[in-house]
Image 1: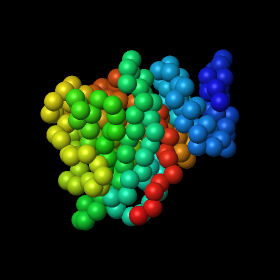
Image 2: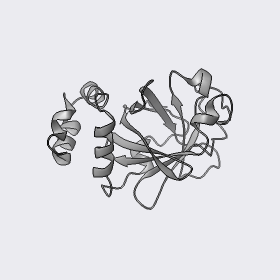
Image 3: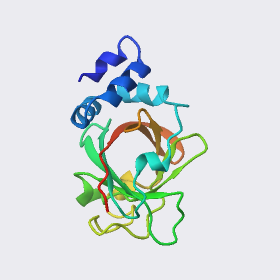
Length: 195
């Protein structure tokens, strides 16, 4: 599927949503990985005020520490393919947050980029790299401070804002020290594993 067709001459968001909702997982991932920065930016702006995105949309399983993988594509000049992996907290942690990290090729140099995600009053998910989970699923890498190694140039001061495109496709933008950047990313939620 060639998503750029839905952006010319202008973005037809409703038609795009219908197609992404009805295609299979492989087609959905392939389509999202074909987005460039301009199309991600247009999709982020068009998704403002859309149906509210909730933590349940990101992690639909109720069990704590069960990983839900989101296949991602970013608008950076290199290392575009990655995954954001999320889970629900265990123990006495607030139920109104998710824990996660970035599974990507540069982890050896930057660290895994752990974060805590919450829903805000705009219907968006805020992924805060200034907060790190106290625990993690056993299969996840060691929690390393985001300011360690080259991570201080990537994660420190960064927050991602995530909006709904469809029930399984999300569009995000990075903010550094409270200011919007020109860095965008798209996520496709994979079918969650069961505990």
